[in-house]
Length: 429
Ligand code: SDX
Image (cartoon, rainbow, N blue to C red):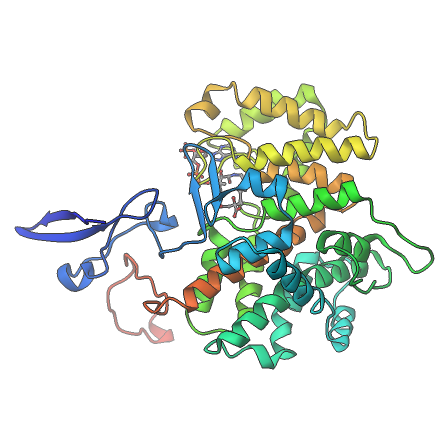
């Protein structure tokens, strides 16, 4: 691709910087030498106009509401694929052949067990600890047990660590849930699919057989696919930044989990359901719509708005459809929170404030209702998001490690603090 340049003129100086084109989406201005050339930094808190890396994994067109994983549209993957197939695609860049898929499934399935000693870590947590706090601790602790896959310079170890993370997250998440509710841990079952295995580990009890509902297992697979990766969002950027220092992959994923927990990010699914509970009835929606528009009120409609999507989040459409399927399968006819969500969406999408600011439902708006119907408490919602996003974090981490140009991430700042001054002894303060 021929590249043009961007001209920067200041203080009588003229500089030109290369404009690089991707295969699709916005071009970038390569300003890597700007500080060396000009003694100035760019300033972009929140990185609203900054590309932090080059990537081939996921493309989002926020204006058109398009999400592609290695070029494949999210709706096609969610409708036709299974989660491990999407994991393979994100990690290797191509859809697997039947043989490759069978081999990948076999490898993941046989890494689902956790080192038995790690089960004792849970007793160190309070039973009422938020499961995301447990996930941060448990995933970080994996690097204390799996030393044979922490040498990030070894491609074989990188792939083993990747498989281990994808395989063990459902086990750890299910154990966090069981510990939270005071039930015994349930071991993974090799004959079950990824999502069915997770549901079995969460909802089976030793006293009786538990048969996973195939419709719910399919819905769970689809929910995992919808959450698998999403370009350079806050938690993925956290994983990349942690990985850029050479930290082991387990520690990097633990950092990603911590970032995802925030209510502005992955914590929004839990916050959205809590918001629907707080609204309580359809006739109180206008009051909350006004609060969301009030600059002096910190309240925001959780599950609405997005840094990139200025159109409907394509995942939210599929999540809404999945929500109806799950409620129908479970015979849940009149879910009050779903009624509030549908009416809230209808009102917001016709309100000038939301139209002007291009605020649409995002993936977190309907996921909470679905996960609650599946039997999960709200405190587990972001855990499920982290479970699914682990493959995206790992794929982006691998891409960064394998990028020959990668270096430690180290942003600069605009300093507005005190200039140099001398220490004042206590008696003279
Ligand atoms: C996820 O990045 C990703 O890809 C994330 C994610 C992924 O898969 O990884 O998609 C997952 O995190 C989805 C987003 C979940 N978060 C929420 O639902 C929380 C509620 N949403 C907002 O906090 C907000 O929309 C953000 C954080 C999602 C995006 O914020 P931005 O891009 O920084 O936008 P902004 O805060 O500058 O908002 C622009 C304007 C502001 O008004 P002005 O200052 O211009 O007057 O829109 C307003 C905001 O006040 N606004 C909202 C709103 N979201 C933005 N007003 C009311 N309710 C909202 N939800």
